[in-house]
Amino acid sequence: MFRTAAHALPPWLGHALNAQRGPVPWNAVVRGALAGGPLLSAALVAGRASLGVVAAIAAMLAGINDRPGSRRTSVRRIGVPALAGALGLLVGTYAGRHLGAVALTLVLTGLGLVAGCVSAVGPVASGAGTQLLVTAAVGAGMPLPDPGWRSVLAFLAGAGWLLLLRLVLPTPTSVTGDLRLDFRFDGERAAVADVYEAVAALLDAVGTEHAVARRAALTAALDHAQDALA
Image (tube, rainbow, N blue to C red; front, side):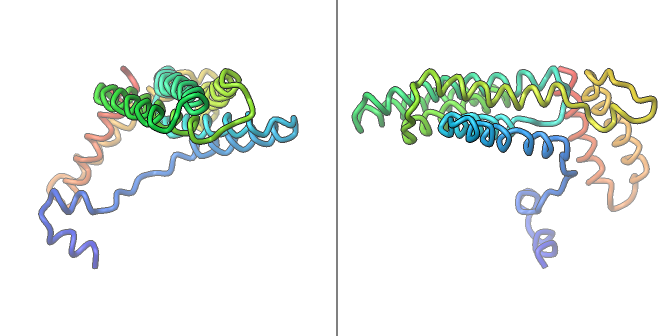
């Protein structure tokens, strides 16, 4: 019923309301499972639960920016927002401890304006601006027994752990066939291969009802390849 109603709507509105389904990024799912949980468990065993919570939050936020692409691109996609998040956590922690309600509101408002301006630059900057504001609010609203600088180090450690997993763990395609272990450029290879496959699928769909969807898939593959090869 919903699909019928969506087709009856104007194309721009139907596209916005129609659910978009894509392949599940199982590699990112595995990295997410190996990130926050083990960090928090290790912190609990060591008696540093508060630092473990901060590290797990950092790994979770870094996982949001763990997107398909090359490993070299992932350093910028994950690392830059993580640095911005550490700065926001530092400012929010000390502001929450030493400022009153009015002054703290003004500080968070200023950070919100800065984050909004930064987010307009591009996708990586958008992630950095978002983490700057979110971690500032977390630092101000979640008093911790540890010094602010120690919480920042725990945050960077959590994000760095997720980034390390992204750089070290091989993808399934890198250990198939001839068991090639040089997987540094798997993201670029896969992105370019997806473009050729999308072109072939579009040629097969010419003159059919699937042509529009295949054309959209080709555009997405081209955008992905451009990001991976940048």
